[in-house]
Structures are given as C-alpha cells and as structure tokens.
Image (tube, rainbow, N blue to C red):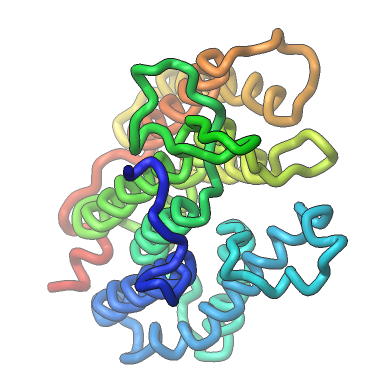
Length: 328
C-alpha cells in the first residue's frame, strides 16, 4: 500500500532520505553544468562550487532546523548529528548556499547572480526529489483527513498515532509537485522570458515562496518562532512580497500598461498581502478560519501575486531574452 512506505531504507541498507538527497544534488549539478557555458561562466565552475555549496548547504539546513526545534534535541544533544533520520530545512540550505555562492563569486571574480541563475532550476528539482525523503521518513505531513473520499495516496498518507494508522494530508507531495512546476517554468523561461541576469533566481524564490506559503499552513510539524509564528511561512511571505515590489519598481516592467492599471495592480496586491501578513504573524484581529478558509486566504494571495507579477514583468522580445541570446 503506497500510503505507507514499505521501508525507510533502500535495499535494506541506505536510508531513502539520504539517497534521494544525493540523487537530487547529482541532478542539480548535472543541469547546472550544462547551463554554465550558455551563461558565460568558465568551465567546471559548477563542479568547483559544489564542493563547497553542498556540504555547507546541508550544514545550514541542519542548523536552521535545530535552532527552531531545539526541544527535540535538548535531551539527546548527539542526535543533532543524526541527519539521516530527517530534520533539515530548505531555507537554511538556501541561506548557507547563497553565502557560499557570494564568497565563491567574489573569490573567482564572477557574477553572483549569473551563478544563481545557473543553479536555480536544478536546485528546485532537487527539492522536488528530496521531498520524497519525507515520505519514507513519514514526516512533513499535514492535517488529518476525515473525508473517506479523500483518504487515498498521494492526496493523503497513513501516519501511526496511538498505535493506529490515521490519514493525513500528504504535504510533502504537494510541495514536490509544486517544485516540479516551478522547475518547468524556469527551464522554459530561460529561453523565452527572462531578460535580466538574476531573473531566473528571483523567479525561483518568488514562485517557491508562493507555493510554500500555502503548503506550510497544512503541515503538522512546522518550525515556529516566538511560540506561534510559522517561520517558514513568514519567510515565504516576505520573499514573495519583496520580490513582487522589486519587479513593480523596475524601469523595464509594466510595459504598455497605463498608470491607472499599475496603481490598481499594486492596490490589489497590497490588499491581499495585508490580511495574509496579519494571519501569518498570528495577530488576533481576524476571525477564526477553517482549513478551507485558510487555504482560500493564502491561495488567493499567491494567485494574485503570481498573475500580477507576470503582467508586470511583461513579455520579452527574442532579442532581449538573455540566455537565449547567449545560446546562439
């Protein structure tokens, strides 16, 4: 039965969690290596970078997770080292990885954002693959599913609670699927849409955050700050909002768009952003929301932010698409 993994180890020896991380990292390196020439980077830039980014990324992911769930490790400090049991956070990996890329780009005198553009598609694909490690570890699941019509895999998974299996939302699968969609958008956009160095990376952050904002709200094992604030959800909202407003203010955005339409889009985005920020910060001025109400609130904001961002970014001519031009 797919709702429950047969084993947490591949071939009875290797933890699936670790194996999937290795597979994802390998694919990310391969994809980025194929793109480095088109981006105008020296040969083997990605390989050289990976020797630093991968170990420090994993370290950052673990440190981030441990910091926001210290109660889980307080009585067994050595278990901090048991990374194969699960417990890493992608935001920690991204923060550490960005720092490594920045230092690497400075040392090699290369464009920081050009390197980020090269690694972004492979990174989000690696995230999509790595999320299945949560399936084998039976973690990153969502709220209880009580409707029998929805008690099927991959919409839901069975989690042991009190000695009996209980259906929970398969939040890991939702995020994996979303990451695949982001990956496809980045791959297509590299040749048809993005006209500035750094746009591939920014779209990765923007779209990943838009999906994570919603999916994180379903999860039962979120990391919290200040007691009740889902830290990953707050970071997703801040990333999404900051990048959106950055595009809105760019001189090459809003092409052919009247001032009135620009103001309308900005007001619409802000109107959707404010209640989501209030909800994310757990400020008690909104009425209590059901699961459907929360999904509607967060989903509406993500949908508005994505649709309006694409309108604001606008179309690019073939001559402007930076990576398409370089590929020729």
